Image 1 (cartoon, rainbow, N blue to C red):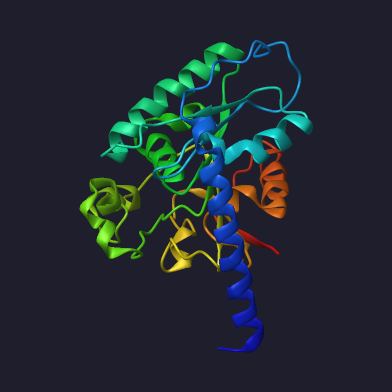
Image 2 (image 1 turned 180 degrees about the horizontal axis):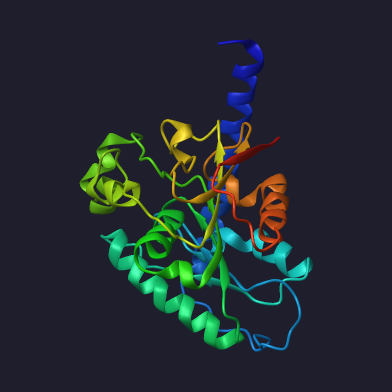
Length: 257
């Protein structure tokens, strides 16, 4: 391994440790479900409503910085959805997400929303969009470090049913790999070459011939850091502002340093 790569790995690991400490300190602030903001009205101008969905054994507090950034840059409707830490099935969580999407649409008076999902949250959102009809109401789904093709990290965690669903070759991932003609949602997958939770890291790249998809490579950023990284947050804002009516199916990609 070359010295620059070693130093990059050390920096990414140190940052992940610092982020983990911060996440533990903030965790209690996101345990309870949020109350709908009084400003959620259909007459507020701005981009589409955004629903944020956290990862495994996490909660909405992970999106504190992203939510603040979206609000400061003109998003009038930003909501966070919690799912129970003991959830044992992605399919059931995706059904619940469908109801949360409908609640956000009714509250804001908007026909379509965007979703940003970190890790498992992105997989839950993808299942809802791709297999449960959510593409009718979700314009863009942005995933951050989501194991679209599975992860082999931490074998001991396979005792948990949801972790088994995230293993390569699982029945759930086979469902998602099946043909999905006519899916109307635009997908953007952020993946990092420094991700140590999604193994191999490239598994976080969404690759499906029927989906309108774009990949964004992030260099040297760990799994926990992805939803907090300044460049990633800026990239998310840019993707959510992408013009409507994108019709290409061929994938596109870019890098975030």
